Every structure is written in C-alpha cells, then in structure tokens.
Length: 293
Image 1 (cartoon, rainbow, N blue to C red):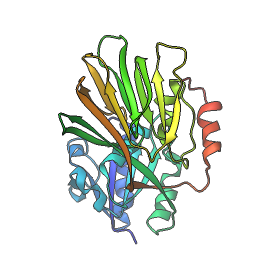
Image 2: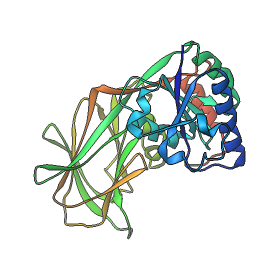
Image 3: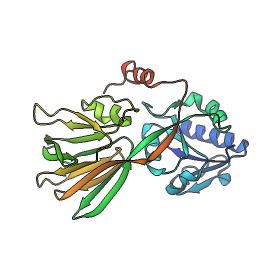
Image 4: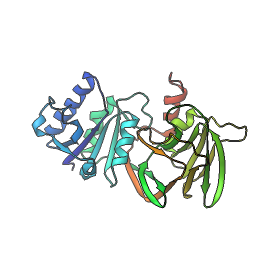
C-alpha cells in the first residue's frame, strides 16, 4: 500500500494546470496519502487546496517517497530523474507538448493513480549516465544525465574543434558547431534533429552526433555504452558550453577533459504504460503528428 507520494511539477502552468494539481492533492488526501512537493513550489502552491496538509522537501528527499508523480512534459520527467538515485518508481504524466517518454496522458491520470496506489503496476529500469569535467586532475563539475550532453558555443555562432576518444582510441576529430552525446532515450530529441539515428531504448549504446560538421566525412557514430568517452577541445576556443539534458550548463575551457560513462548500478524506474509500445508511440509522436523537427 502507498502511504507517501512526492510530486514534481513543470516550471510553469496555466490555471487549468493548477486546477489539475489541486484535484490530485484532493484525490490523494482522500486516500489518506501523504503528499510532498519540492521546496521551490511552496509559493506557487500557497493557495492550493489543503495547503497546510502538504509537505515540502529538498531534491535529495524525493526518493524517500513510495513513488513520484511527474506532472509536466518530457523535460519535467528528465529533471526529476536526475534528482533521484534510489529505486523509487516514477510516474510520468504528460502536461507538456510532445510527451514522448512521459508514458501516460492527462486523461489517464486518475485511473492510473488508482492502480499505482494498489501496487498494480510494472516498471522499467532506465540507465543514467554520468559526466565530469576534469581540469588539472581535479573534478570541477559533475552531473548525471538521461537524455544527452551537448558541447556547443554559448554566444557567437562560429566553428570550434574537438576530439573524442574512447579506450585510448581517437573516434574522430571534428570541426563544427558542436557535438551531441545522446542516450537511446535521448536519440529522439536534439540528436534526431541534428541528423542522428533513432535507437531503441533497450539497446546499450551512445550516439555521437556532430552538429553541422565542417566536412563531408563526419557522420553520427553509435558506440557501446560500456566504453567511457573523453572529450577535449583541440584549440584555445573560449565560450564553449557543456549542456546537460538541455537544463544544466557549464562553461568548459581548452584544458578541460569531459569524461562520460555509464554506471551499471545507476538507474531510475519508470512506471510503464502497458497499453503502449515503443514503435507505436514513435509513429504517433513523430510520423503521424504535425510537429516538425
């Protein structure tokens, strides 16, 4: 039986979205379930139904819940995943635009919640990748990512050079607008828009997709995710930015090494929609939709 639920909200929302949050709060409280939100939501929810019954927690406390509800788009779910390091199941409900990895629609919310609080659900483990920036043998930045890590210029649009190595082999040196290192989950995001391949999430791989490479031979490469990657700038270019999941940014310099690797023990659990499958969702969201990439 579920006793404690944490809810992660998209950064912005209209009144209809706030009304939905209120309905969720009322529904869960009627089931005698404790509800927690992140501390940053306290002001936004100050006028919520039964505000005094709500708990507000730090990011690191999310995983203490019996399960987590992510109300928002893919970005909200991805941001939630980076905060969770335990085995707490995450229910992704789409209140965004595309909603490719958020398994459930808004119309399915309450029927799904009814099943989840009775432990009538299945989960799937999704790998989390780690990166760190090393400068003079000291780690100066580290993060986890589920979608992608991107190297690009953060102001003037101009080419820069970078080199990618794995197990002491140079995979390629490329001059262009940057590089996308994407997971299979992230292969349908920025990497796809840049000409990278779609990779099924069950495949253990990383995509390396150059962004507008200045050459005729630099094509996307798919490598095993068991191989650690090392990325370095090969000139003295400044204002190069490392972006993690499109949500966290860090400026890197010519003396920095970016190390990317998978840790087998680091994963998150998605509550899956058993009425859907990957290829059907792919067709619905991309081939049959009006959204242009």
